[in-house]
Image 1: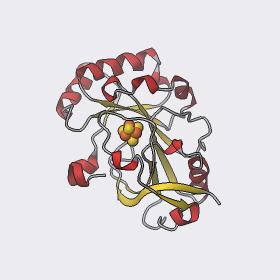
Image 2: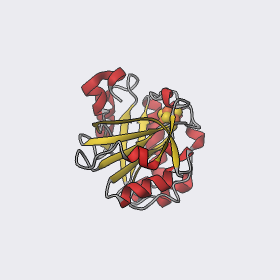
Image 3: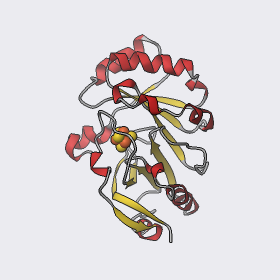
Image 4: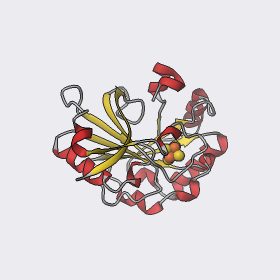
Amino acid sequence: MSTLIINEIFYSIQGESSRTGLPTHFVRLTGCPLRCSYCDTEYAFISGTKMTFNEIISQLNINMTKFVTITGGEPLAQKSTLDFMKKLCDLEYSVSLETSNCLSIEDIDPRVSIILDVKTPGSKEENKNIITNYQRLKSSDEIKFVICNLDDFNWAVDYMNQHKLYNYCSILFSPSYGEMPLQQLADLILNNSLQVRLQTQLHKTIWGEINGK
Ligand code: SF4
């Protein structure tokens, strides 16, 4: 029987990506091989409950929303995640996956929208980025940079150009909460004429850092 270790399942407003503002079911998986400096979900590193696919799906309701976000932790660290996302797509959910670019995205069902989090030096995990993942992205996927400071911003601009990331999909710049002021990042994007989307974490604007998941 197919199972996953689940940290939490909840219904909330999507705070990130082009789906920002949409009521969404979130399925947070346990475990992550990274330890980013700014991680706000350390509680998902170990804590979790083994659940069958059917038990997880019984907590979702397509009449409340068809949008499901698979997050973590790092969801791809559990092998069954690939089959689970396929099953959700078969049930006509609109599935997005938040993944950290430290594991291959090769076998993900093409119906899943991928948000690929490219790690910057400010995360202290930038050496884990898998460069071959970029060519596997669809035009409907998104690449995200969490920007911690000015050095991160400059690194991200150079990295985008070096790997021609504009060619693959949309690019999001998100300020690291409590480190990079939103207005400073907005000014940097405008002053450098970047074709990227400024992203806030809307859920934290609504509910604050503690309650905004
Ligand atoms: S990849 Fe995500 S869950 Fe893992 S340490 Fe980094 S921010 Fe936290």
